[in-house]
Every structure is written in structure tokens, then in C-alpha cells.
Image 1 (cartoon, rainbow over the protein chains, first blue to last red):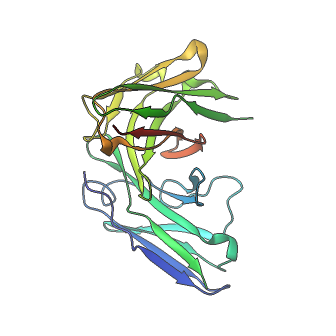
Image 2: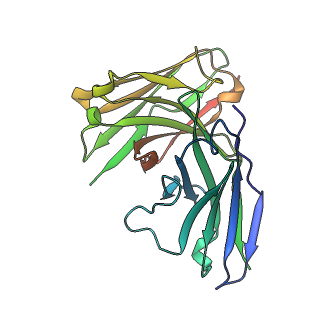
Image 3: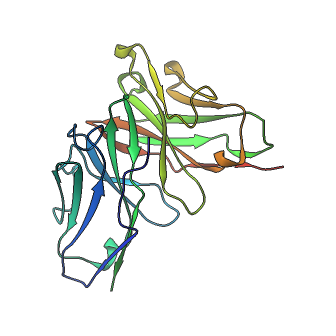
Length: 110
Length: 119
């Protein structure tokens, strides 16, 4: 199972909105609404920020939102803040009852 | 407080074995699906495998890269999860995380334990 494809880096200025794409196939992202997104600071464990494609866990800022179209899921961060500078990973359920992560995206706040 | 704490990482020679532990607190392990995820130095996250809940007979799934070499088990009486790793190669060098699966998302993570495979 190949990793889902994400852009290596995305950047934006404070206050702007950015979108991170996560492209899979009809065997994963395209067939299931089980995409989750994680935020990871350097040297720290990942943190769940979106599950089931668009739902936010309690305590996660509403500046984070998720969506899906076809085989591509997306994470949008609105009102970008300095604290959003981190690595972001998508993850999807796969036909074979396994999971696969995306390649990861480094977000830089300019 | 809901918490996961991994242990058991270390330096092991290629071809060797290692068993990682993950101690859960603040919730009942037997009710939960639990995953292992790893991250090689400077690389992205890689899903390793899963054990389902007691209600699903603790069935397991593994990534192709570790299937046949790694085994996930648990001891619900100790509220602990394990990852037995055999036939280790340098490609298995990584930080290993245990995590709880809820509503298709990994909502609780441990701090990770480092495994280094080197001669």
C-alpha cells in the first residue's frame, strides 16, 4: 500500500487560509469517509485534529476543517497563526482493513 | 487522565528481536481498538498494525512491511499492549507509538519509544 500523496510544504502569512491536499485512490480515500488528520510538532507525538473526514475532536480549534472530493481529501487552516507551524499528516482506511498515512506536509507561517 | 506510555525501545542488532510495551491508564483497554504507528528518523508516519477490541476477539491487522515479523498482543488484566518485533532490519529503526483508535481517528497517543537496529 503506497502512502497517500501530500505536498511536501505549504506556507502562508498570518491570518490567511491554506489548504493541504491528500490524494489517494478508489481503494482508500475515494471509497471511505474514514480520513483523519494529525498535527505533529517536532519531536512530539501526533495530535488528532480531524476524524471521519470533517469532524473535530473536542478542544480542536474550529479554524481546522476537513473535506473530501473523489480520491482527494483536504485540510483547510483558516486564520493562520504562528502556532500552526507544524507537520500535518492525513490517514485513511484501506480496502484491506489496514490504514495508510500520507507523506506529510510541513506548514510554514511566513 | 487518559494516557499511554510506551517502553522497551533500545538498540538491537539486525536479525534480532525486541518487545515493546504500552501501558494504558484512564480507560479500559479491552473496549478499544489499539494501533502501533512508527516514524523513521526524519520521515513520515507509517501505520504498523492494529488489535481490535475484546468484542471483536482481539483480531489483528498488519502493514505489509511488518506482516509475518511483528505481532501485536495485549494483556487486559494489566491494561497493556505489546508489539513483538522479530527479524529486525535497519529499515525498522524508528520511534514507535501506540495509539487508541476511536471513530476512525487515533485520539490518544503515547510519547513514543525509540528502536535502533544497528550492528
